[in-house]
Image 1 (tube, helix red, strand yellow):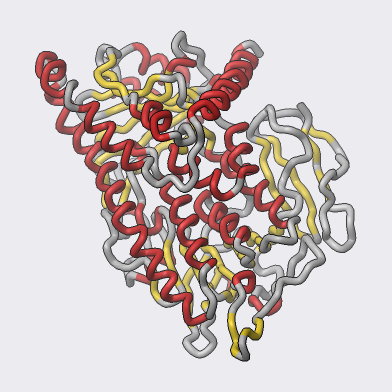
Image 2: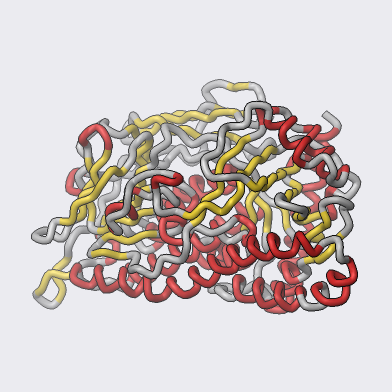
Length: 539
């Protein structure tokens, strides 16, 4: 495969749907694709070797912070020659049409980008403020569970199919817990596939974070070309440092670094667990780690993504190996790679481990060869490490005037529950629907309050389930040597717990899918997945 450097060919800035390649660059997993759109540099990364050519976000409006004044009154569409309507007179009074709201989103991660898509479908104008200078190929596979897939399908069939084309299904695989020392299965999570089939939900998938980001950006590109939708502008290399609400005008000003700002009708803080929007809203210390109000989980997280072939590669959805003090999670990825996570019991903000490979081999020296082989296959340069923090459920309102929070900024979850991106997508879906019902500017605050009321108990429950899973592992590990207790007392009980847990997580389902359709889609995804892996292993 070859990747193209694409440029906008029209002076008006209206990007062509079929851009011509201006040059070619060699194939690589992290090839950079650059496009110029109306003077703004667009950065995309080709993270999949099997993506079709010339299908990148050439019509997304991206620009550097500080390029121009970014007040809402002066922001125009730069990719299309169409105007967004402004305030309209209805029955002799000033009323706000849905597609006039200008919504500023702090954070261009998965939750922020998906929120932009949902808002565009309602006809709103969106400005996304992203702190990174360019979108990079980063992060390994994440689980997008049935509830998250259902929300995608309800929002955009095109986006839903794009995600399926860039992921692998959990259907037909086995997930669960193994004893770390022997590698024997202890419990399996059959509910991951049984519940979606019984309830006619889309099946859960495993997708690289960067692949999912690619799908979201490409959907924004497509919506920016549709007259029936709103517009999204993404400002790169910019961070929201504070905000100010003007009670006279009703506007919200998001202040950025370097003295610039963006003004809109609503500000949504989708800027992650270390959210600056949250810090100001709750009057919390603006910092990270122990300098924040987040809670340390007791683990330092190490991870890597080596190319590695195992006999059961295509049979495993994901697997957690548990043992004293530590646990180890594996998840087969696309292109023959396996993502592994080592959760090592540690004190908060402990020293950086220089030779992490040797450190982990020593920590897991008595564990099954399945774990040690993966560690041996990894190199120090490819092993990342960080302290693992989360937040307890936030019962304080996530909205204050015309400012609200979304995703990890208000309900960061443990990774073992597999619901981080799914909950953020649910937030975006609910929030956009409520804002879509706004008929007058005075209704905005009420819509944001309803958003919090509709989301708080579900997100708090799933946060609690994630933390409960982590604590259960700590309780379970001392009992592992007592095999009779595990086999006759705990094992019969846990499947009921898993069914209840996954059943609740999957219960948010705005659009269903017939089991026969889901199985057929999963079969096609598996065929592609096998072909990709075999090609990677035999290169």
